[in-house]
Length: 67
Image 1 (tube, rainbow, N blue to C red):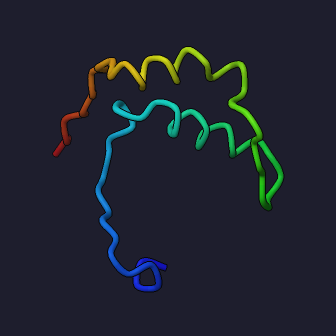
Image 2: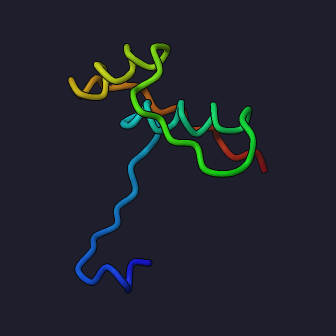
């Protein structure tokens, strides 16, 4: 798809910087397969939307590898 678009940039964003996408991704595991279109943001995601818009920082916890 990126090739079809032409000029396109792709970058990784940690879930702590995009809590809305992370929450929606987790929520999607509980719905049927197929296309799901949301006409508006679900009420349960409102606080996360505000936090993401304001750039609220969340701590990223990284586990230590045991070896």
